[in-house]
Image 1 (spheres, rainbow, N blue to C red):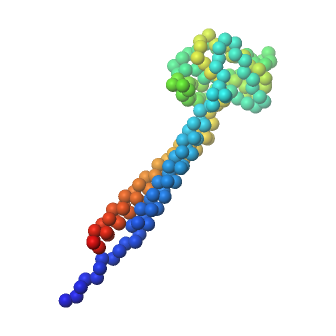
Image 2: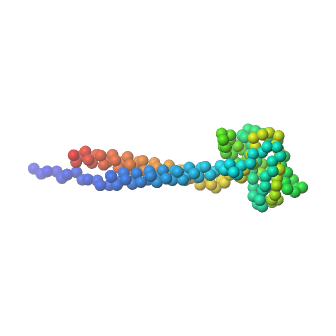
Image 3: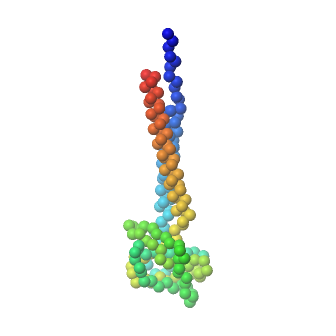
Length: 177
């Protein structure tokens, strides 16, 4: 009578679990980096000017600032530029929105920009609660969203690798015991 050979060991199972754990560590580190990218999408408080009364904002050559109003507010504002020329404040389809301190803001006008003079612009609004800030960087937003999808894919792959590796490893241990 012959003795059957011992079951073949699969040394790849612990390696797969270790690789999966490594992917999870990478996903967490990338997640922290992507989280910082999310925080950079919204203008920093130092870049935001609150409009109260006649508010003067300085626009450098070629720079564009955006006038934002709380969502669903239809404010009455007057924007005058550094010259007698009436400033072009039309957004031309570019719209931006972001939250600040629990208030969601939407873009309603641009200040400065290509073809507009640099200098001091005066923003006067009847309503309170408006702000002036730089436009949001759409390219940055797209990059952060794709980075988030990558983090989720790496983390998901890591979880699957850890689970499969550990299950196979445990099954092999019970067969040889």
